Length: 150
Image 1 (cartoon, rainbow, N blue to C red):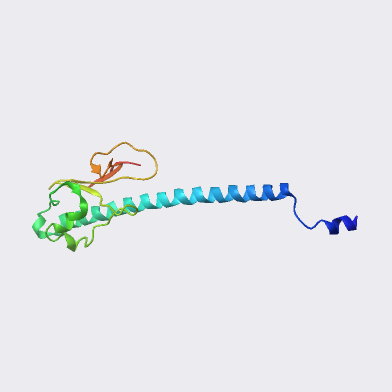
Image 2: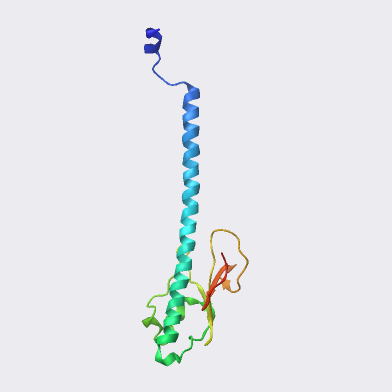
């Protein structure tokens, strides 16, 4: 009996297959979780970026003497040229961009209201209006909070 135990020095093929299968399943689950977390993180950054632009618009309306209590008029387009509005760069020196594509968010502003748009990676949501590049926007906020999206 002791002799047989000493002679067995390796693993059987079945044992190796079982262990590699378990490791593969664990690795696959970790990759899927990581991928979902990174997409969720980028969506959170998009929402935060829009909140940052929203805060700058609110500060501009309430603090800028030349604004007369109104939002800047900005035709529906990407937000990159908001800094061209007189004194707006005092409130937001650099307009944030999408964390994955480095493209600009979509903005529409009139003296009495504004809407800021973005696309999201997780889930399929109803279109909120506006064109965020090649797709419809799926998340929108305005002066009173979220207009459309999760």
